[in-house]
Length: 235
Image (cartoon, rainbow, N blue to C red; front, side, top):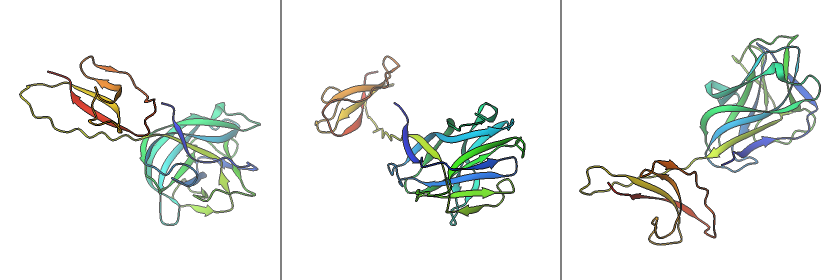
């Protein structure tokens, strides 16, 4: 299943933020501002980037924010990209894989960029809108001391796109029986059909422990709502 674009700001980019070893930049964002307001697992971010010189590895971290809208605490998740492969003229929209972490609906987070080996002659530039930003769910922020303290500027927003996957919770009911060991089938079912079972309303298998196969079934059809069905498939 393809990743979903959740939060983003892709307005005009008329300015740049120069990331170095000590100068870090951030963009805060709030789940549900422009995208769907649901809990989800972040998988990647896309940033508009270019370079000067050979800045080395760019680290992109996801942080919580404090009451003043500033990044706070330890990284919740992160990813990296080779800054030396960025273009030197026109910026590239680069997608950076992020380690999995659940982001919560209506919650503000920060994307933080740092580059440990970069200096004033070797810089990663993160493009931003410094003239007419319209993103209301967060702001641009800068740290001049490697993330120890932050200053927020509401007059600028960085270009960013945050991608993720939805979270599915499955509840298993306890089966009581005489079998010593049980195998289970898990199916997607149409909730409009009763009783909901793999034989009455079963649409497709997600995991079949009898044959130990994972088909990654994507539901289709006329049903407007879907649920999960767990059934005993024998001993």
